[in-house]
Length: 185
Image 1 (cartoon, one colour):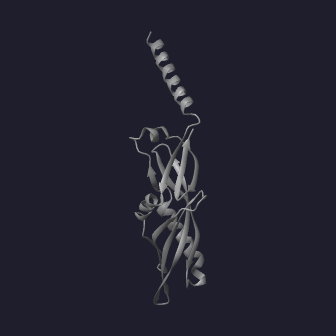
Image 2 (tube, rainbow, N blue to C red):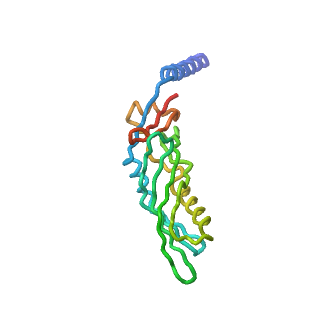
């Protein structure tokens, strides 16, 4: 008798899950993140500094989110400061950088993470040619350490619509100045 009840309960549970998936099939849920929301998260991660063999110190600061219409990646500009030792003299150099990053959705914690950051541009005036590749390498490593897998948004438990949306990332695009994220089955 206990076996029969267990089988019935299990069958009902499977049917409930199947019915829920059937009902949710084809439904899509959209989360829109503004530049300001993303900016606030990035501001918390900067400035950041990294030194290389006592030769130079690279500082990345003041991120500025740029949402480009139709893009499938998030971009942000940065100020870059390089303090480099040439002989006995320290020489501060400054410039800018542009970083792009993808977005990854983790259904386990219902969060959106920055992923796959790329240094699209780094322009620091006056870098000695022998240090250019190393500065770019350190900048890339610094960006990877600081923002890769960094959460920028988490779905709220108290929103039933968002709770239902804890599914699969289907689309990501910048539209009308917002990062539009579409989730569904």
